[in-house]
Length: 276
Ligand code: PDD
Image (tube, rainbow, N blue to C red; front, side):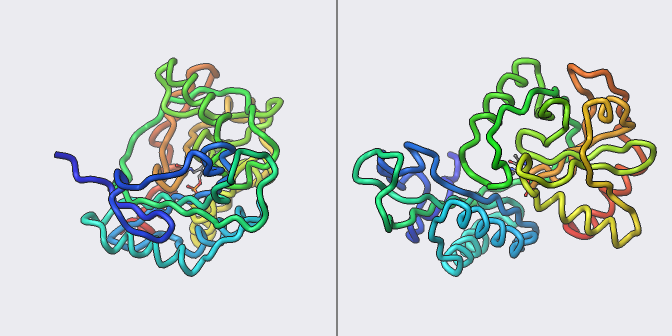
């Protein structure tokens, strides 16, 4: 029998199966929610403060009240009480339950929170991806659960046996469906610059900072599909993928080396700092 997932809903710890949510929760009717995925290794959260700061930012953009002390306590409790030492915590903060569905919410709703811990290992898994139009809204810097654009693009790519997508707006590269993009061009590591079109990924920032300590520069700029086509290797980063190299782009001419020295070096530096 599968061990039930352990979760927490509005401060009460229980198995996820026992949690009941109102259909008038604004998470359900409007995806009026923000979230974090906090990875942990050897029972210690990776970059916990950064995840909390990003959650605070996301909630502030939606003018949503959040008790960060409580969030920190609950995420820590999920990690320390889990039977596994490597995994992640999914944690969502929702505006609350309206008396009736209405775009304009009632004032002072009680914020609803939900989290669970899941066992997970960073595995070396080369990805087949496809490139696609970034059909999302203009505030992708907010880590909101409104992810329909990502969901539609990733499921369309799945039909082409792809694990992920790389999105672009009018040829300008943005990010993966659930990850940030890096690639090597002319022996330089490049990544799209932060703006409203991409999520400021924590893994992205950790990697850039750690590479700096080894005097390896990462160019953050506007890049185009042609840059990816001319790249000698590319990888995606996220809290659940770590650094995942791209083996193939199904619908773009490219020549990607899975074992490129700059990728191997980045992976070695990242794993040494965060996964050992
Ligand atoms: N997603 N961009 C998008 C659109 C994402 O959904 C994610 C992460 C990232 C990478 O961010 P970070 O390094 O902080 O995980 C970039 C999480 C893992 C998810 O939704 O499951």
